[in-house]
Length: 373
Image 1 (spheres, rainbow, N blue to C red):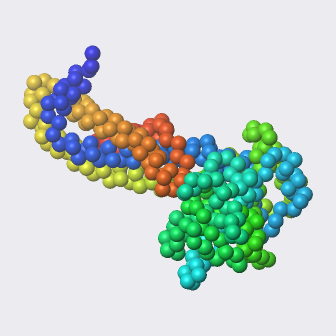
Image 2 (image 1 turned 90 degrees about the horizontal axis):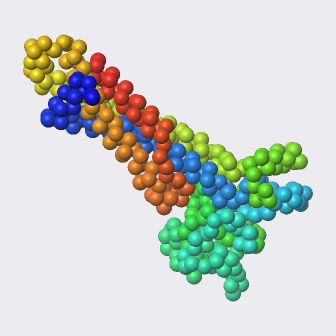
Image 3 (image 1 turned 60 degrees about the horizontal axis):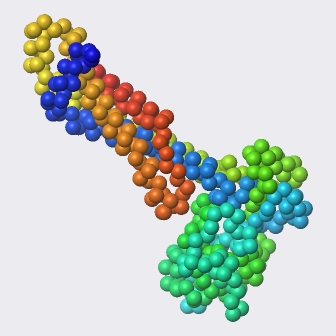
């Protein structure tokens, strides 16, 4: 059986729940924010880990700026797995009427790109078909933002470098977009041969050449050994290397900072809501003062009256915390599809028990501190 104080508190709370609306709202907002931020951060981290190969384009990648990979380096990589090469740079795209826009060029080999995942084009066609040469002009797949900036349509031509290209398809998604970081212009995808013909990769231009390697054996132990072997074989290479278990270190660091900032904001909101908790508890005590006096007149000890009042407050707090945890658990699921559609982020929505525990503990601490002080 429940203790007398708890039974009395529940009966009284169910009979007269007035005054706890603000109390419950303050706790729900704070707890849901803390648990939701933690769950969303965990979902993003899990998505990066699960989709590491797809985002990176292989098990490991090596990039050089303004320098091509040497034959010896390529031979080293080819001896250990499949290669896929891309080149990244910025350039200006121009229409015949002089309208121009800064673009992010990605030059690929359609025979090997993408190694994992798929490129989504509109109209639906193979990447090789979109980028092939027709009537002497190579094709490009472009971000729809470029069409809007240039007021252009598919089928029209633009100048990039010294070459003319046909706007062949709209680039809806690319599996390795996240690995490239933040771009300063819309994407333009072309073949590596087309990039060479445009004469953009001249001495002094900033071109990032990337080699992706898919190992024959993709175990983590082999991956770490391969990265170490590459560094030992070419100690003066000066390349930037990444592996599928650390696809985007910068994004991961920014994600951690963003999660910490949002958690701090949520804690601040919860503490600020403590004022509402204190006012609600004070109002509750004022309303129940006569009832508490009657209990004491009937012989109830002061400690028992205190336990009844505290039990009512904690019962309302438990309901608020439960509602906050439910709302917080729904945040990753609700944000997952939006982040996938808007930012092409690999969100793997899941429940975060640790974040829920922290949210519940912080909520309970705020209630106890502001209710008792």
